[in-house]
Image (cartoon, rainbow, N blue to C red):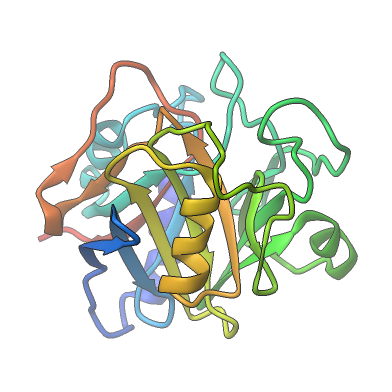
Length: 246
């Protein structure tokens, strides 16, 4: 997998260098860490297993593998729900290799709280799709990860979110611009409910579509903020920016 990234990277190093912008922002009395990726200048990748088929699990394992190839990991975040064996719960595609099919049926837990969605990575863009719209459109993603629920769907909050919802966790997710050139990743710095978290994407970041990744296990690597969450247990899918080593 890392070797495949190296070949792709040869084609992308000519792009202008630009570090992901990360900052802490406040909205409606809550604090959030926000990392914005410019897809015209930066390279987002998904990571699940190393070349030996072992789950990366931690940001540090990805960094070590990339360093061996003359690259480094910049911003990174967990990127979708997973089973106990770290296998993705929903659709997962990594550099053309499909690990899990699309799941469009309603089910238990947050993942099955329809509508859920898919983050699709293509060269030079990233887009959050509602799952059934994704199936109908059939975009040619290079990599993709499915999670749920959707936070914002075409400018509207998920219909099941309540302002006074009592389920509160540290949560993380991603939103994309209409043109697909901006992907904005967010993790709350304190516990929030779904309505508060989704409102941050729609009303503060002004993003038309956003997808929930996870809660409670949410982690962030943001060098700009001096943050590199390790956690006690391994993660499943991880997304991050790959850069030339410095």
